[in-house]
Image 1 (tube, rainbow, N blue to C red):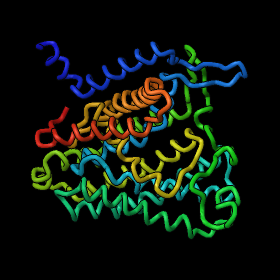
Image 2: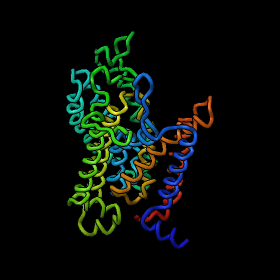
Image 3: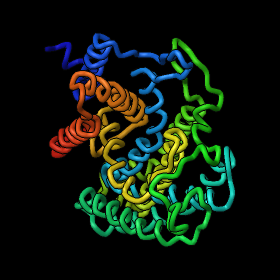
Image 4: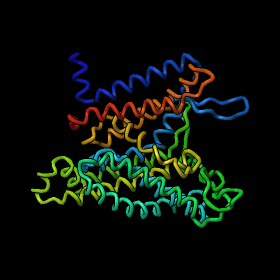
Length: 360
């Protein structure tokens, strides 16, 4: 018991439990002939193993999970309004498609355009959070849902005519799913400097972008603005008495969080191979929130290490548990059901600790 208490001073109990469950499920998968590493079929096609897929998901979800840090540090709590940033990133993507950008140029053009959209959206969202202090997480969820459905109307009315992104029969309105291989944008960063090691393919470009984002966040939170954000989130009354503008810090934090969400969906989509519009952003905040909470963050304090540990464990768990469940319950497809149970169970546990959540 003493050893467990000493260990949980450095690693949170949820991290230990979920990490242990991940290793247990990997063991069950191996017993049921599921491979940890990539396999090659007789036809030469590669199938990702459980651990290989976990690494790809880790890079894919990295920036979206990192977007939680500034919001939590500012005192707003986990950014359940992440769909605001996501729709900004999606809008930048479809503009880039319609204006003829392909391959790496599509990513390089979409990113700065997404930042512009997200800064505007994030400023408005930050003002809203200042107006509803005390109810941030519930209002954030409603805001993200509302904006997602508002953009559903936008996707139907944008005057783009490129046949690759519009409904094939109507010729107007954007498709639900846009295939990125048609513009050379699928896996463009995954394959950049990619290499194989121990039977696994590493999405080097995607991981480098994620680690670069972590380094930027580390620098930002140690800047004058970042320190003011953390101080205001930790003790608003003291920060205000010290002359800090707490409301301005909250707005800045939400703008950064929204920008990371917008960039994160670009990284996610190029890795996934598809851009998905309409209701797809609706639930994307929840895996990101679950990931950072698994890493040891509370609703008041979050660090870069929480992002790295949590995203790796949670996405590894998702990559492992879903095929294992389908193997154990052959003939059924429990993937979506199991994913919702796991991620929402983690969020529920964290929120039950809200009353006494301390900085890790």
